[in-house]
Image (cartoon, rainbow, N blue to C red; front, side, top):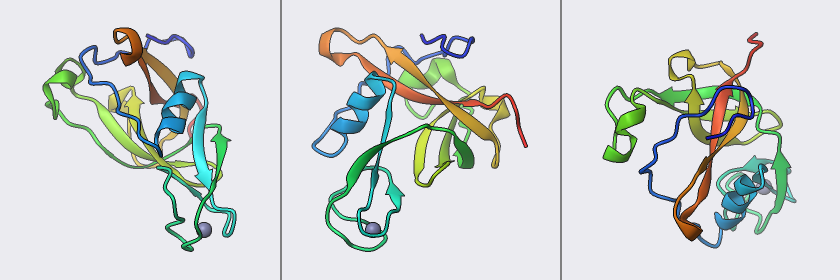
Length: 150
Ligand SMILES: [Zn+2]
């Protein structure tokens, strides 16, 4: 559990670890280092997530990885009352949001506390370590409700 912002982050201890591929490996490695990596188009300057070989906005090939501070606003969310998979049963009800990052780009993550999640909620990032065995350890990006709401 992380205690970066004071309150421990509950985790789904049986959550399956991510399976990084050639595009997502940079993101997952960044989270392990407490960094949030997004991609920026060198042609139109728009940020995007997940990483992909071509810009979805202008079609330019490639992109540059940059670090986002992870603050943002909830754009949309779901709050399952029953877990969608057995691994998350102990966390239900939980909230998963699409967050519009400050500076551009949207990212997904769990919002805590779940009952505070709402469209327009200001959030700050935090990181929850999942202690899988050996190489299965991974870090989850979690968004906390920011203390100062507009
Ligand atoms: Zn572009």
